[in-house]
Length: 501
Image (cartoon, rainbow, N blue to C red; front, side, top):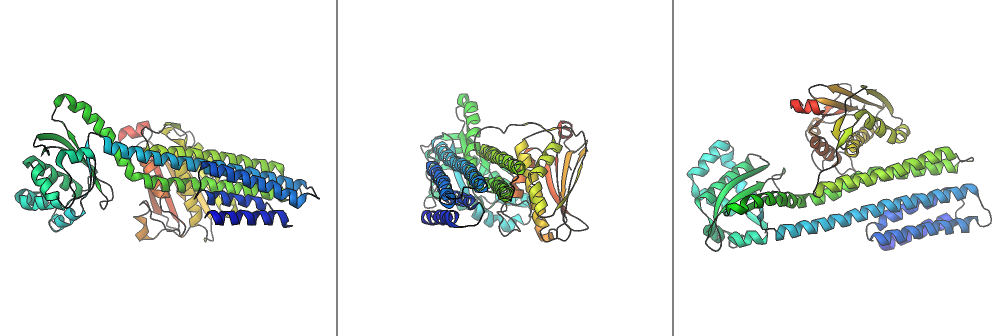
């Protein structure tokens, strides 16, 4: 990759210095920076950016030493500015990646260093063993497990332990598959089996978590009373986090319980760091694309016979605005994986709609998409995160524009409304080809996409953001063709009513 990057930089320099085309070839150095992001660190990105700017200046001097040219000078200046902005964004991404790696290492240290016993376990084989009886319903399965203790123990031995911290091994030993039965036989008490039975039933019933008190015979022979908490993933094919808090000493029980809840929450986030990295790449791609688009537009205005400095200034202002928005997006997404709450404040939904449409105005015009806007005036504000809600609406508008690429009629309609029982409603309607029935139920599933170049996480992230605002998002097919996406977010009054249907 490093060699390919160097060759590309050399090719861009040669073309820029020795070609007679009056175009801003140096802007292509942005591609060099993006490639460098794959193999170098922050200092490397800065050095490469400075080198690209130096090559831009050198290319101008070689190509126009005998014929100074104001247009060429302006193209070179804009190219250098675009390279600098791209470098800043690349540095932000690289620094964010470094923080994520540090956070992952810190969470791993917490996982190993905490006094709470934690296991990462796979319930797949136990669930498969229960599947024939589960077809008759959870109550029938519960009765069967109560009446057949041997089968319940068999299911317990089928649970595979993927990882365990030191506290877990000190409590009941190492539960690897070679000695799992021996370890459980030594640790089992009647209450232990009851706790496992209820956790297994909660897992099969589709619950998100379950907490129960259980007695476990420790490795040293002592009978320990513990609070066992199971955190179940939404995808039942993934591992389950089991934590066991020793509450034998009543004086320390309350303090340890609060600590275990906080630690388990942070440990659970470890599993989401990979998806978060993909999310950052997906979400930052939009402002990066906007930066490139506006930079190219600025270059076109400068490349005219009479450069339009007014339009060029407007484009560069949008480049700066998109660069700042990329930083805000990284900050918001990173906060999902660290301790703390996102900043919430009063948000004007109509203002967000107009801001987003202004951001994509050039792109919509380029694709000849007309916009019909119908905003209900004087809407009440909602308590939310403005940048996150902008991302939701940006995803919906971009998806609508993509859906209408091949349509004869290209009309985007956006409207807002207020319902006293539901809250603020925002709808985005396109005139595209629509969504097939078999895709409609999977639209908001992670990594599901109908785009060849898509990652399939935009709508999933949008749903998470809307649900974190206590709202709901859904899609409907239009009778005349196309799709309408709606999301509703309660105001303080609507949220208190508890009705979002």
